[in-house]
Image (cartoon, rainbow, N blue to C red; front, side, top):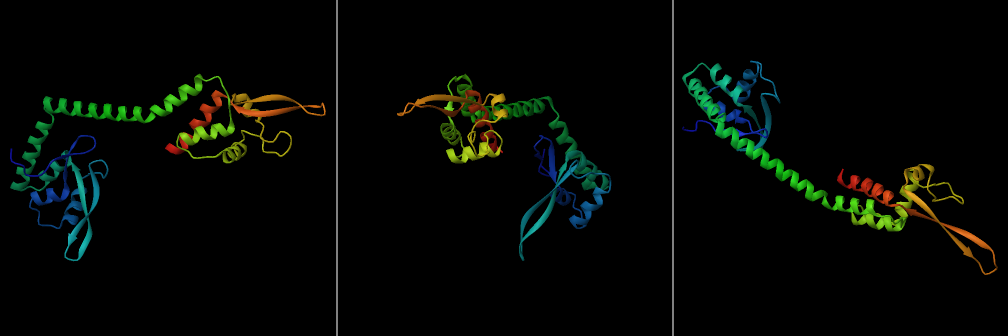
Length: 239
């Protein structure tokens, strides 16, 4: 079958044609812009039956924007019929033959296999991209050891969000995970953080030279907390 007008497939694998190429194939004398505007009055809807596209076109006066339209085959068939010319009949017959070929069992199967293949490749790419995050999350969730906030900052940086210990402490205070009120409990976990199981407090007894004893408190991030905060910061990187 001789190609009268080029047929393309859109993202949904539906056959479409260029409005300007259709205008030329039908040998319409009216200016394209006026002609297409008149065609849309037959009940065709933008973004449903056709898409408006703008591309650069070289003219004697330099590059200028040129509007074209990506038209679905059903609309193109109707437009060809509307012309009521021999050329319109010829183009419509061509589209009908294209449609029959498009809907043949072989072509339907080929498109289904192609779409399935694309979905598999997309899924494989996503799995590969998520692999480091999954491995990290699994390792942390399985860990029973807690770490210092400074070490958590290093882990976050290794996973794509650059942050130092001081900035992380400030972020934890500003977001309600650590107490920001100056005093003996400054930088201690808030009630919310403790209820979520994100931190634990390690107490160390210190015996001084003069014999008195004091207790030092150190905030440590639990395995659950490490996973929680890493996921938060990875989410900001991905957003």
